[in-house]
Length: 331
Image (cartoon, rainbow, N blue to C red; front, side, top):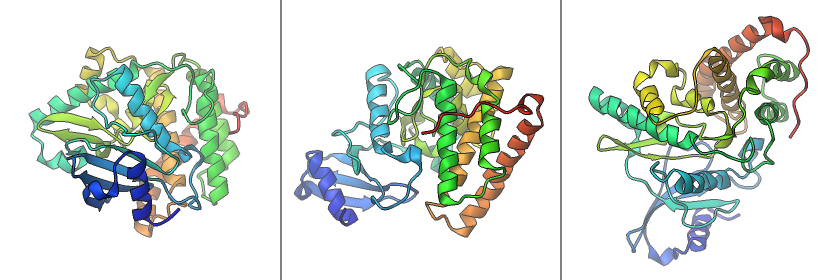
């Protein structure tokens, strides 16, 4: 596929930007999947270019074609909820690259210690409005857009879980329980999943690092590679990563004021737990193909694997899981 620079030149050319027009470029830190560049052109264009991993780099099943998913998300939002700030793709993505506009601001995670309480509260409320606007967008089926959509959320979500468990087997990732037992534990919640009947747009990676802020406002929602059509409650996992979204009263007030469709009741809390467990599976399994160092792996073991094991133990102890659940569809 060529060097990173050769691939960058090709990606820009496909988006109509000749290398001779580039006056500055730099590789950005912080990514664990794509290689990301910031680019400035002589026409005063401020761009971000994402390059997918080389073809021989192993990826999880849901990661196949995710640059296309990210571009798709921005297009859906621009068409259906233009008030929500997101990047704009300059050209259709390829399997290898995505060229898009750079958005103003810095990640919330970098600004957290600088924000005054009033400023923080104002932006959490604003974020609630934006997420409600995302969740107002409806699809024609459930699941990842790069895969065939499913008619039911149960079928789509259990298929998503199954795909990660198959990846765990492919990469030899140790799990808290055998993969077939984990499938059955998720499948035992099928009736809860059947309560979701309308496919809604879900970002699924709205932790503070993917929320840009500037001058007291949310300036962009970025990195939408994990987006899918599904249960809007799934977004509340990363919005309160390792926490409890119900404690974020300002965010929820903004969300409800804008007509956000997600309802956090007893069943909703159980579904949020399902989506948290799914995210933990992704975070734990991806560590092997991405070759995280020992310190990162140890952090994941404490913050992700151990809580996941506790959740699975609790589900296994519940009466409804003592009968064998239907096996979910395979991808």
